Length: 305
Image (cartoon, rainbow, N blue to C red; front, side, top):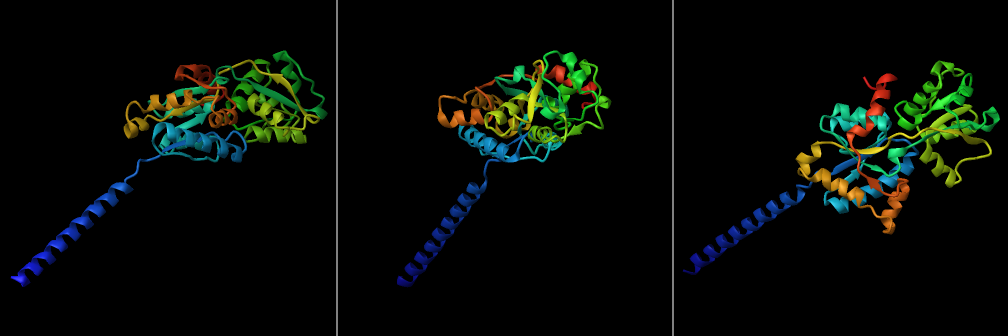
């Protein structure tokens, strides 16, 4: 009787240990099944360190608001941003007008969902090295002064650093072949400033907001370089979201992302910092149709097939 009781107790303990082990294993497997992160990105239109700071802060904010992991993934150039969005490596991307159109055309169902308050009336600026002798002007026809001069754009796929400046040059009957030598493509707006400031090019064109930001930060030597012309307004930067997020997080997820962006509040210090880094007072709605002019010009100069 005693021997039977001990054996029974031993079997019961073995059974409980096995159950405990299975439960623990099951719990462990459940905990390792994590939600796939929402991956954000942006065209590299300025210094990579500055981009890393602003978009990492924004990713942290979105993670709190959306309740899913959010990561910022940098890319090497404008084309890489479009490609990463096309293949699904990036879910939510800050594009310029041109790259936004290029990305949407390759991903059916992609939506332009938000822009800064400044992006519906955006401007480029033309700058010149002061030793070039090119003086500031207000009439678009005076862009003819750039004929026979060395000139640099930003990235080949930049809206504010190439597409719209080239469009306005053509309006003034200035062709790329009218420059001295080949037109340059610096790669980003910060490099355009530095190249013109150094005299490597007599003139160039770039994003007005980045010019102003660098000027305010005293990162430009205004004794060497100045703005010579400000373009008319046009639509530019905006957030585009990949339709794959609806399958991953639910049909209402796009609306949640929009709401999170619209809710960024300048009265809350940490959110004001994000808005300041992005040079915005607030985010506002936008839609695909707002970039029809950009698409038309892009097709005309061969940047959209």
